[in-house]
Structures are given as C-alpha cells and as structure tokens.
Amino acid sequence: MKTTDLSRRTFLKSGVLAVAGAMAAPLLSGCGNGRKHEVDEEGNFKKEDPQPDFMKPPAPIKDSQLASTETADVIIVGAGMSGLCAAISAAEEGGKVIVLEKTNTVNFRGYDYAAVNSRVQQQVGNHLDPVDVTREIMRFGAYKPNQKVVMQWVKHSGHVNDWLLDMALAKGCKVQHIWTHDEMVAEGATLPTRPSMTFVLEPTQEAIEKAPKGMIGGKPVIAMAYTLLSTAQDKGVDLRFKLPAVQLVREDNNKGRVTAVIAQDKEGKYHKFVGQKGIILCAGDYGHDKDMLHYYIPSADTVKINLYPSKANTGDGHKMGLWVGAAIDEGPHAPMYFDFGMVNAPGLADSVMRQPWLSLNNYGERFANEDVPYPFIANGVRQEPDYSKWNIWDSKWPQEAPAMHQTACKSLKSVYHDPKRLQKLIADGVVKSADTLQDLARQMNLPYDKVKSEIERYNEMARKGFDDDFYKRKECLTTIEKPPFYAAHITMALLVTLGGLKINENMQVLDKEKHVIPGLYAAGNNSGSFYANDYCMTIMGNSHGRAYTFGYLAGKHIMKN
Ligand SMILES: Cc1cc2nc3c(=O)[nH]c(=O)nc-3n(C[C@H](O)[C@H](O)[C@H](O)COP(=O)(O)OP(=O)(O)OC[C@H]3O[C@@H](n4cnc5c(N)ncnc54)[C@H](O)[C@@H]3O)c2cc1C
Image (cartoon, rainbow, N blue to C red; front, side, top):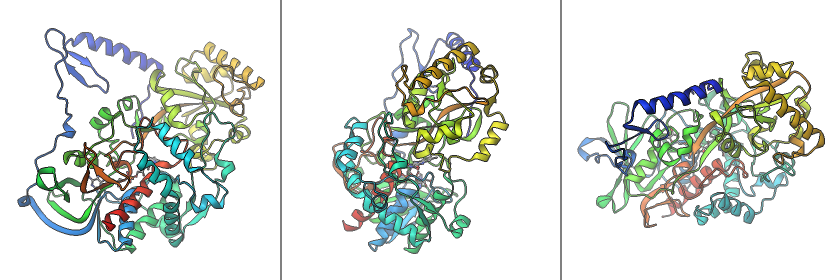
C-alpha cells in the first residue's frame, strides 16, 4: 500500500507544477488521473475511441491452444465470500463443483455481515422492518437498482446468515453477541442506522494456525475464511489455486449458451472447464484496474489508498462478461470509500483517531458535520484541499469517545482499536501530540491563529450543547481544552467497487436487452443491479451480506435448472 504525504505546501506546489506543465505542453490537455486528450492544431479535442480497451474482446482461445479440458456441473470463478458460498450451496445439492482462483489462497477481509432478521438478530432483540430496509437501499441507489434483486437480499439474507453461522458453529467457532441493538444504533445520530450486523466469530486454534496470512480484520475474519474453506473441502468442492479464468466460451458466435470458462496456468497454458449446469462469476471487483476504476468511478482519482490486499481484483469477471455481451450497471458505479487512511503512515487509522471529533481541513477550517457514516465523511473530505483532514481531540477521550456511541468499524470494542498500537503511533509522531495548541498547530503545519479561533468557537458551541455551524449531535461535541492535545491526519481509502454485471433475481447475467445469457451467473462484487451512487452504510455489512446471500442463491438456482 502506498501512502503519499501531501502537506498543504506540496499540494500548492503540485498545483503550480500543473499550471507550468499545461503551459509547456499546449497540445496536451489534462483529464483527471494523469490522462491526456490529444488536441489538434486548432485546439480542438481529437475524438477519443468511445470504447475503452478493457471492453474490447480478445481473440478467442482456440481448441488447438488448449492443454486440457475438464467437465463439472458448476464452474465458479473466484474463491472469496460469494464464490465459496456459491460452491458450498451447489455442492449441497449434489453438484460437482470446480472453483478457479487467481491467487494462491481464499480471500477474505472485514467481518461485519449484514442480514435482515437472522436468528442471531432475533436472539439479541433486533427486528428489522423489511419494508424500511428495502426502501433505504433503493433510496441510496436513487432507484437505479433492480428492486427484484434487492428484495431477494431482504427476503433471504436472514436464513442464509443462519446457514453461514451454522457452518461456523460446526467448525468450532464461538459466537460473540457483543453488538446488541443498543450498541449498534446511536439514538439521534445524524443518519439513523439499522442494527444489521449479526455476529462476531471467535476462531479455533486450528483455524488461527491454518488461516491464510495478510487478511484485514483479525480473528473474526480468520474464523470466516477457515469456516468456508474447510466446509467447501468437506463437501468435495475442487479448489484450483493460481489458476485465473481468462475467457468465457459462449456458443453461436456469442448468441447462445455460456458453456465453459478457460483459465491460464502460470506456464501460460490454457485449460478449459466445461460447466454443464453453468458458470458463476464471483471474481470480485475492479479496484486494482486503473482504467476500469477511472472509467466507472472517476471520483476514485481523489483517493490515494487502496485497501484491497491481494491486488487480484482487476475486474476480470466484469471483462469476461462484457466480452460475451453482458450488460453492466450504468456509471458512475458506487465505490466503498472509507475514512481509514493515515496520510503519513501505512496501515489503518485506529478507531480513536476516527471518532467524530472536530475536523479541520488543510487550511485549518471546519467544513462539515463530522457525525456521519464513513462513505459520507469520505465524500466530504474529497471536496477539501488535498483530500485529507485533521481530526483533533484532547486527553478526555477515554470518557468522551464511548459516549459518542460510534458503531461498525469505529467501535472502540472492535479490532480496529488497539491501545498499544495507538501509543506507538503517538510515540512515532504519526498521531501528533502537544501540551499547547500552538505546538499542535505547528506540528500540523496549519496557521495557529486559524486553529485557535476554530477551536475557541467549537469549545463555545460544545459548552452550549448546540452546533450552530453544522448541527452535529451534542454527544459528539466535546471541548478541546485539556492537554495533551492530539491530532491525526486522515485521508480516504478505497475498499472495493460495487458496480457489476446486471443480473436478474436468480443471479443470472443479463444482456443489454434484459434477456438472460443462458448458463451465466454472477454474484458478489462481480454482479450489479444492487448499488448505485454510494455504499448504503446505514445498513452495516451489506456488502458481505450481498456476497454470501447471492452466492448461496446462485448455487441453489444453477443446480435446480
Ligand atoms: C479492508 C476491507 C474490509 C472490508 N470489511 C467489510 C465488512 O466488514 N463488511 C462488509 O460487508 N464488507 C466489507 N468489505 C467488502 C467485502 O470484503 C467485499 O465486498 C466482499 O467480500 C466481496 O466478496 P466477493 O466474493 O464479491 O469478492 P472477493 O472477496 O473480492 O473475492 C473475489 C475472488 O476472486 C478472485 N479472482 C479475481 N479474478 C479472478 C480470476 N480471473 N480468476 C479466478 N479468480 C479470480 C480473487 O482473487 C478473490 O479471491 C471490506 C473490504 C475491504 C477491502
């Protein structure tokens, strides 16, 4: 992961350089992401090829180029959350299943799993209104999502979550009911959230020893990865690692059935896998394909950190689908942005740093209500200079932070808060600490007069208990008066992208005329028809929720048809 230290000075300097560059190169014009449009002698833009390269189908791999051909009932591309759920689900129906995986392991991260009225939710007294949840998802997507698809999640995520939990229990995982209704919903929060998270898993020692390395999310993610990998193996799913899928085979000159997928091994040899019942694309998102990201989510140009660990998420499943005529969600696609990045250090910002403290931009100005879910914080910060902000708090934080009642990935009870690491970040100067505001302003490289006046105004509103400037909830208005003072320079990160191939309510991929492409399914971030604009964070964990529910449903449907 690459972090970039962009102080205000460097920011201004880069602006100056951009102007100088534009003057020096009159035949090139900037267009975000460092791209250039060619301009003719009269200064008009030359017409760009309307079809980006990633959409152009490569030459079909011929039978004569194949090193092997194998047949199964179902071929699944990708061994992440949706792929393994699809594999186990199809295997439960007696299917012979082969999973092709690009990396050398299964891939998991994070651990919030949303559902609507799962068994665990009922146990802790959470009842979600399906009507409310449906309307919330549709409103977030400005009614661009396919409501039939959304309703499949609302209607099925509860029982599929029970299915997932039963597998984890059978593998010896323990369930912690730590996030009860009270802990998941902050009364009076700027935006009401739904208590949609379901459980936190404690893995067995065996799971800890056998889990793949490098996953973000600590023990709970280890528990889920181990549960799904070992259950798939128990059910006879045939997992092929380091074998990326590269092309689909669609009969009748791309008008008939998708019958097979071709993968390429590390020696460059091609292997054909025929899926008698079909192929399920579960190859995840395209966050690490720069061209796709810029094309479908131009705002990602403002985000400097990409937190998807393996870099294998290059939209291969999207591309393979497009090449055989699949329709894709209208752009711009929804990103999952997160206020997780530290400007001056790798790794995730600690939960303490990300509470809704006073935030100042790189000119020392407060600019918004800080008490909103992380995608909105990210959007707000992306409008500010340098796409970063300073969060400022004081030594009263151990009493003040819990009262703010932040949930999901900001909870101080979660793995995203590590007191020892926080101390080290302070000692290393990543989190600034000072006994005077003057010294703090100096360390932040912000004008002291501005910082002082913003803090004085903020303290005044905190004492009064009302935020005249941005209407922040009063529990989140805390004075900054008791040294030591702290400041963290936070920037935004991209976790995953959420737009994908259009599907119907059975997870069958659709063409541009909304006809089913026979034999082809998609689930998880490879699939679309669910999000638009932004990630609906008011229903926490619904990205996993979609992945496991639709993987499960695709596995069942493909075997019954
Ligand atoms: C740091 C982080 C934390 C997160 N935390 C949460 C959370 O707490 N809650 C939540 O709901 N969401 C969270 N998310 C998002 C969530 O992890 C994903 O949206 C979800 O897991 C997607 O599942 P998937 O099966 O679609 O894709 P993935 O899990 O990305 O799996 C796709 C798989 O396909 C493989 N693949 C790719 N190309 C090919 C190919 N050509 N051939 C074969 N295999 C291929 C990949 O290697 C990968 O194994 C988080 C994301 C990040 C980055």
